[in-house]
Image 1: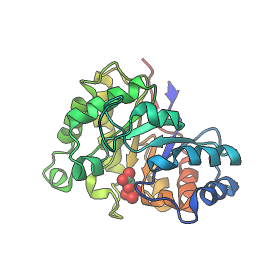
Image 2: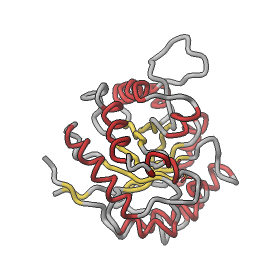
Image 3: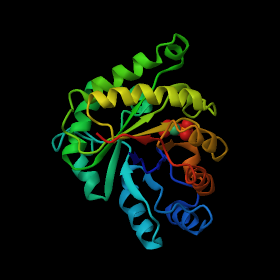
Image 4: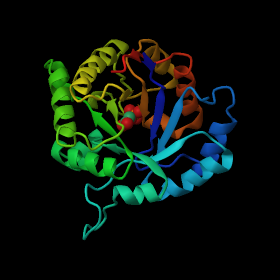
Length: 262
Ligand code: PGA
């Protein structure tokens, strides 16, 4: 039996914290009470140009965190104006890439097929794909959550199969992202089981499954206690160092769900 090490991921989207990178990292590091120890992993995804500067601030403060990108191209190089490859973000210190976030899917038209190719590109660059799935409100109300999430996972992972060494999944229901309305612990537990079942079919039992959508220091403890997630993907609250560290602290004393290692 292996205990998943809880993982907390900041998704800054197209924002940087008030006060800038240095203040953010300084404030996280000096928050000694809730500073995550070795038992909790912290990843931060800033916009592309801040990957390397953020990496430098983290090293300067001796803060224990990794950086990663919020997206990348499915191609290695080429005449693709405005695109950035997985190798390029790796060169800037990234160790992971968020893929298939609902904002990429809905605002930029990303399909499961494209996300599958991006997962392959990220895996080939030796980075960890953090793949987001989740249903919209209509699907939830029609009782189609399990179906939607299963289809997204199969279509994203299927074509990319065997191309990734390590994988993280985030369950992010669309109706919970940036709305202040988080999924209940019961929903998180239930959908986690759906995701785990698909991951088992792919031989990916050791992948971590996160929850994202309006996570705050206030609801993080409840969600963590229910054991439905191996950590969180955080948008809004991740721009505020005290909220971000508060969420880490809420997760620390609650080991994530044990899983059988096959
Ligand atoms: P939120 O965003 O925490 O602001 O709801 C989560 C996300 O989009 O990853």
